[in-house]
Amino acid sequence: MDYITWRAFYTVLVFVLFIGVVLWAYSKSSKKNFDEAARSIFEEDELKAVDQNKTKQESKNHE
Image (cartoon, rainbow, N blue to C red; front, side, top):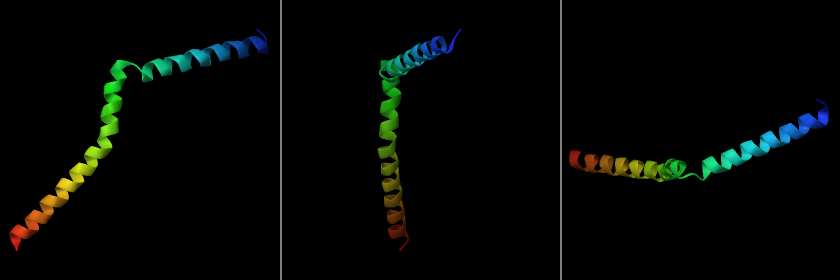
């Protein structure tokens, strides 16, 4: 096999992998995981706010 054949094989392989990644990214089973990961950032902020409110209330109770 010569160099041109290897390049053609490599191009087809990369294209098939690209199509595989696109299908995986847009599949319904992956959507749930991606949505959960997207919401996790906001959940962390909410948890920090709740923790800060608890510490403020605890400090008021100890006064």
